[in-house]
Length: 361
Ligand code: ADP
Ligand code: MG
Image (cartoon, rainbow, N blue to C red):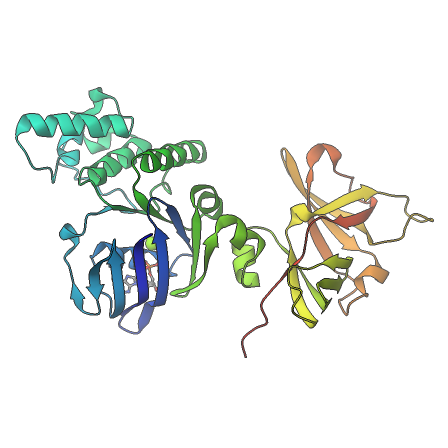
């Protein structure tokens, strides 16, 4: 069952169409990541869901209840939606305990008990209760903001780039802890981020926004391997994009004839491979074994355990399908096995090439 459903949601600020015609379904108990470049409308969409903004058109439905339908809206505090904004936004003049207990009903002892429970949930020690926000690290502040949002027992939790201020190690650890905590509590979650690695690791469902529009939604794996277009492909990671001729499920391209993931289309198309689908094996620079697709390593970008190699295709391969003779590819390789710069290599492909949709005229 869908917990949240957005239907044709639109929101403009003056001439800026921040969110245009967005349809999205989020399943109960699942984790969705909304990704997109800065300014693509992610925060605006969260604010419409939370009820801080009314949509200009469209509807927001949570667990079958209509929260907004055009200009008719239910106020934010009646929505049972938790919201952790980009900067955490703790009240600076309140202690940790008072921040978490801010909207809590009940007498002082039931409130204290609930605050203690929430501190446990977000793994903050009791000794933090009397501290002020400025006495906490960035990660601790985010945990307090999360505890404050959890205090309202939300059906839906919205997280707006909550980890962006944390440094890399803490960021991954906090993300994992928060994901586990929300899953254990069965809370449907939407995370907004401009970090593709964070989105891919966090989400069951990925929703990609560009210029106010939702360009694609699906599982992380599906969108990574089958993006709708080149811009989405490169947003989610490195990609090798080549012109090809399709024929009954095969793509003829500079890498030879490789299986394609669309057997219903024939003729010219753009295809995509992820760099990890390409393997290199060193061969003698000239000679009998130089058949198949070959190239020369022209650059190596060392990245620790893995490295990224630039391979210039040899002339006959490059000219196979109308591409320019100087075409280069990126290939990811384990650092230990990487052939050196200058080596001649054979390139083999694993898996299928993804065929981009034909551009709509
Ligand atoms: P993101 O969170 O993806 O970075 P936003 O939703 O914050 O994007 O912004 C989307 C667009 O709407 C941007 O062009 C931004 O400048 C504009 N925008 C956002 N909030 C307002 C506002 N309160 N008033 C005017 N323009 C806004
Ligand atoms: Mg934002």
